[in-house]
Length: 323
Ligand code: PBG
Image (cartoon, rainbow, N blue to C red; front, side):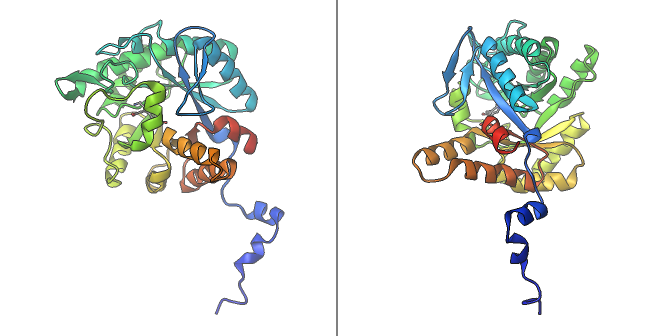
């Protein structure tokens, strides 16, 4: 019936035609670059599990931020590795913490760059969990107070957006309340609303020194089996006041990205996590895949699934690919 009248190959026959009919596009505007802040000055050390990404002291973060700004990237996302860890992660909410220093340095040197800060205790706690630990339990409600202090200290340092990634219940509401009380009622919250307990975070835990000392994160991060529950998580975070929401990881969870896109008319991001990046890097290093083509296809697919923006370790390279 349809063939030979209809031949879908006609619109694929040349590059300009393919450009004209492309349904999805990635641009530099869609990309957020994660940075890892360490103590000291003049430190710039490549992260073994994330080739091409670096541990940077606050002054070097400012340099890197300037480079990102020059590449046209809209935003960076900051993680911190403290000088000392303790059970309550106190450097995470110290005015002198590495992230707080880096935010201040960035605001001076790269004023046009949006600075998003990760709000979570796991990099700062001696046990490596994202909350207050009692025995073998990670306590929810006592953690909220610490997360609120952390978000507030980031805001006071000059952060533009705070991004809670801990997966405690009620943390968006707790952050919103604290920020509003302290005069930061215009500061947006980007919530890692649907964050799964994923093995794809492996290289990050090496990079952030945040592997849990006992157990795992399955009592607070989501079960990869659950899609409906992800939508409940997002709905609750939006009710609590989240301005933007994230799905994480991205690639094995594109069904969640699509479902979230269809269900919620809000800014939606996806986190192209460390394991997704490391797999590409490792295979490319062996000559098994073409790094640029694979990475471009991944980013395009994340957008096609419905993400408005992507947090990715490829951001700096991709800024060149997708100018
Ligand atoms: C902190 C946090 C993690 C990631 C982002 N924020 C690790 C984890 O939850 O174990 C992972 C990012 C990545 O793998 O790129 N809670």
